Amino acid sequence: MHPNSPVELSVIVPVGSRHSDMSTLYAEYKRGVIECGVSFEFVFVLDGPLPVPTTQLKQLIADGERITFVALTRTYGEATAIMSGFENASGGLIVTLPAYFQIEGSEIRKLVEGLSAADLVVGRRWPRVGGVLERLRRRAFHGLLSQVTRLEFHDLGCNARAMKRKVLEEISLYGDQHRFLAVLADRQGFKVTETDVRQSEQDRFRGTYGPSTYARGFLDIFTVFFLVRFTKKPLRFFGMIGITTFLIGALGMAYLVIERLGFGRSLGDRPALLLMSLLIVLGLQLFALGLLGELIIFTHARQIKDYQVDEVVHFSGRVPTESLDRTSTSNITVG
Image (tube, rainbow, N blue to C red):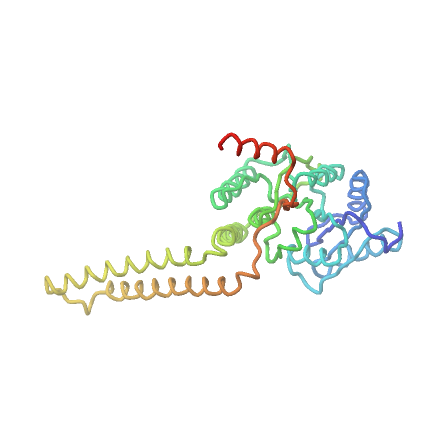
């Protein structure tokens, strides 16, 4: 295949601090992609200075492999690496794969074939190997996410995904949003499915997660909750919080005023007066913030597209003869 000829499938591999040997990993992935029966290219994105993977990838390119190598100046995160890889990808179909063994390479075909009925296919490692603590952590994460987004997913930690190009053309990832790509795509109106893939025997994480990791995960879920539910309705979010805060402050203030006027109790030495005043002001500010958000959304509404068109059927201007016959007969009968 000529290096500049168009391809049907682009495989993006973001490479971070956790990575396997690039030559071995590439060989495994390449075998799986070949089974898809389409022309392909690989785009490796190094998220920061990584000397060993850099040397290995440059050697693969020197050996004639169809690889695009992108090196970022510093560590930006996997989401940014994926978007950088997408900018250098030319395929109509996109597959993202981790830089370490997570699924069997032969399972890539399942992800690509799933695009015949969906816009985005996310992999679910099944059967899944792991300890009791890991299973509980995974169930808690997906359970909370399900309550927040009302979507059922089982393994968003799996970085093996296949999607049509239009998905990343309309969704910009940043921070740690790559793991919530399926949720964001569903919100945008894309068809999202989950398919079982065999877990790699080398997929073993022997480290531990610190409290900061769980805290970031919780904040990420809250971020996705706001993006999914209130992006175009900020007043519903800030307004409800603001009204609730204002009412608590107003009711508390009314109680203090009644005590002062009706029972002669002094207010000068009561911290509750300051607290209620702060709640009233905070409630008004939150409500005003929601209104400001609504004004911004209204101003840019025409530029915001959060839907997908499944099919358009135009009227051809011709009515079938059979329909005309039925209409004529009906008119005669009624007359």
